[in-house]
Image (cartoon, rainbow over all chains, first blue to last red; front, top):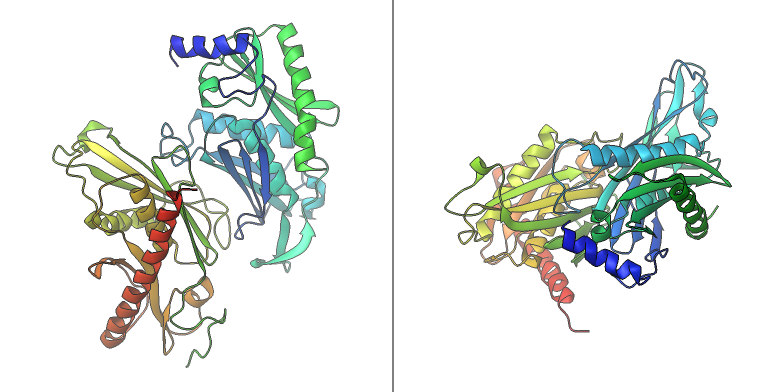
Length: 257
Length: 233
């Protein structure tokens, strides 16, 4: 982003308004639609303004990790599809896609959102593994929050496929839900100049000084990720976390318990 | 053996329900969604834009580049590993050949038109759905075209000639021929033709006629969707 564009973003922020007319701590309209892919065991579409992200869940059976022989496993992948932004290129996941997947992964893993103990079939031998894949359809900013929300919504409507002890029949979905403990909500707060905003659009993302993604589970913080090229003070961190807690209540209402 | 009734109750020459929409991806220069039964394709078109790396550029005309991809959760069985496979590369390639005859890229030397086909949900017929959506997205992007392209899979299940095979029919325990066909509706010319299975020459000629008839119907739906985007409210 050019210096002029950044000055333009800042000029508005000084007056307490954003380029698109929003207040500083205001999200665009958030929409969640469940079960958008019949091929997946669970899936969801999340729209935040013009940003659109899909998440899909596939289940398989695998050997548990040696250090957790009584638990199933989970894995999260993210693809920044070149269809969703003219700047994204085909090829193996770049660092932006890897960071996105790992930040969503941390929020879900560290909050123990999935009850992995209940995924065990046979100790040390067989357990369900939950594979969450996030894909972007249209990138108009704030992929982090949209991806986290889509993953939760997809987990919520996941049903186990039929399993007879030797083979999974993916054509038949049972009515058994995935064991979910809680739903951690992610809120990303941006610092531009001396101002803090949530839910940035693409232009605002390019003007970012610092970014903090806060995953919140109940009254606890369960994961953090700082981004952006500028450092933040502890005073900044406190403010950003306060904003994240405040906004997480709105998102929680949308996704439900 | 005789295939008496289709598993989903359709007539033998009937497609699954079709839904088409244009302008579904805002950042793209052109975009479309095409759904046939449980198969859904999203397509975004970017360009004409400068082509890199430079050695791929053609100083005489623009280049069409298609990328077909199944989302990891879109398969009917296990998770599909992300990234290109031999299958997806071949489909991308034949899709380029299916679309090129209707495009005029002479005015765009050294440029590329990128077509990204993404499938969130599949139940056979994905390359045809991708071509139908791509053709709409190219028109939406304002690329000069002399016609659109409509594609459908036809074939034979035992003794019956059928249109738009679904996954269960492709996997039918008996004799099956699966023939994806792309048609340029105004001339009836064929720009994609592949086949898995076995069929007699007579039956092939018959199903190609079925494919042409169906393509004309699909083309009406494509044109309707394009008009809808530009309707005055």
